[in-house]
Structures are given as C-alpha cells and as structure tokens.
Length: 421
Image 1 (tube, rainbow, N blue to C red):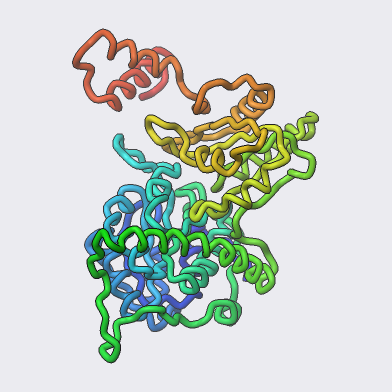
Image 2: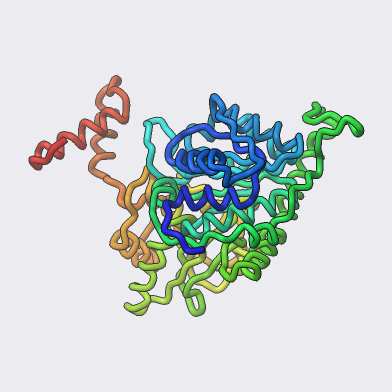
C-alpha cells in the first residue's frame, strides 16, 4: 500500500510486519522516531504478541535483545552514533553467540566534538564486529531491507544491521510502498532459532574458549559471514519476485555499460551522485556509478566484476580512519588488486556537511583527468580554517580545545561579513 510517511515511520511499520516478539527501545537521535512508532503500534494493538521493553541504556537494549533471541524470540532494536558505541560489548556478543538480532542504525557522526548529523562513522566503526551490514539508498529500500534482514539473519544465525542515513532518510517524508501483512508472512517464515534455551537439552551459551580453539572459532565466524554472501543475493532476488521491486543484494550499477570512470559509494549520497553523473554524461564523459549495498561481509568478487572494465574508480565515503584515510577505499583496493584500475579516495559529507552536485562535478572531472593527488581527498575542505589552526599549534603550546578554536574562527568570519553568529 502506498503511504506518505516519514522514513522512520515507514521502517517501524516494516519491522512490525515482520512480527517481532521483543522490541528493546532506548531513544537517541536520529533513530528515536522508529522505536516511538513501534511503541505506538504495540499500544494500539496493531503489533500483537510483542513485548515492548523500555530499557535504561543502549547497552541494556542490546543485552535484552540477546536474552530474548536466545530464549527463542524474534528480537529487534535500533540505535545511532554514541548509542552504538555504548552497546559495543553486547554487539560483539550477539555475533559471537550467533544470535539473529536485527538492528537499525540511523547513521550519525561520532564525537568528540559532539555532532548529531549524518555520516557513516558509527556503523563503519563496527565493521569488524561480525554483523552483516546492509546500507539503504532510499527510504523505500530501508523499509524493504528490514524485511530481508530478518530472513537473512535467521537463515544464517548472524545478526544484521540495516544502516540508513540519519535525518537525510529517517526524517524525510516520502511515498513508500508498505506491504500487506499476508505478503510479508508469505516471504518471512516464523522464527525457528538454531539455538534456544531448553531445559530438556541443556548447554552453556557464552562459554569461555581458550587458545586451543579460539582461532577456529574466529575462522568459523569469518567463514559463516562469507557464506552469507549468496544468501544475501538470493534473498534480494526472492524479494523482487515476491514484491515486484529491487532492494538490497550486494551491489547495484547505474549507467555502467560503457563507463571508463566509475563512482563507488553507499547510502543516500548515491542519489546526488547519480544526478551528477547524468549531467556529466550529457557533457560527454563516460562515467557510471556502482552502489555498495552490503558492506559486511564485503562482496569482493562482485565489486571486482563490477569495476574490472573501468579506467579509474572514485570511491566516495562518509567516514575517515584517522591516520589512514577511507576504510571503504581499502576494501575496494583489495578487491581490485592486480587490475589496471586507478583509484581515487574521496572523503565527503562528514558530520552532515552538504555534498553538492557542484562539488561532485568538480571532483569527478578532476579525478578523471588525474588531477587529484591528495590521498584521501577531503571534499570541500576549508583549507584556510585548517591552516590557521596549524599555524596556532606551531606557535603556541596551549591553544585550547580544537572544536572551540575552529568555532571561534568561524564566528570571527561571520562577524567580518556582518552575519549573525
């Protein structure tokens, strides 16, 4: 059914259609509206046979989800940013115990300095946690990915994060096609856990493992993640057959038929990138887009096949690994090793900075001409602001907190231009 909804409400309705039996709720922007709406659906009796639990922290939310899952219930929670970091110990436990919890991460920057706007720092910081990570490009895809996520998680007994850009998607009102309950029931079978607390068949859950078997435990976890790749791909095909639209999978391609230059990215920024590519195509540039839908496990073979015939690839990502650069670029580099494909790493949109078509057009044009030599290249970096701070640090031992120093410089600029602070 077509509905005009806020992204968070659409996701909440999609989750409710999956018949979760335990929803663990703790508020943190920008995911709060998701669990609020699920609470409303529970109170109105629309979401039946579900225990909605208000917990005292994000750590508690994931801990309750683990207990619910191992007791045989379909469990769901949502978080963002510092909330994800607060639950990290339990996040690792979920994957280590093989519990198919589904969690929405409404992507938001990580502090300090505090920032509530969108980038991918939070979920990408957990890339080694053993969770499947699926990234949504649109609100429709975010809704659909949650339905796929429960099916993937429960078939593989691996937890799944569905990552959607905070505010950009979560708070945007769009028309979404929300399925009927009967359609979701036909697609998603009832939860049948691989492991469950059973007094008639007792065993330890979370037992200590010593050096004699820990390597094997980690190898099997790695192997299980790789085994999930064809399941993720197959689930997307089954979803398309059942609902008549594409969602998820491993990668997507746009105008790649004769592309010599490819832009590689994930999340909602793909929309702006595609618009930019359309305009560059009109100007004669042979450029296309490959969107990454599944970040973990990383679909190395699919990425290699998608990029094998281009001359250069521009990897645009909304995260930076301090001291190294873009983490996504390293994964792409590994996938392309041995191929004659030049690679440019671009960090863009950190902390919610707008990523405009004008900036992308300049970046892609320069990258295609081999004019970008910075590694990584920070899109729209304010060099004057950076240089002023570096000069202060060279000339003074005590310069105060970095965020305050930069805020003072920005305020001074505004005053000089006669603008309000």
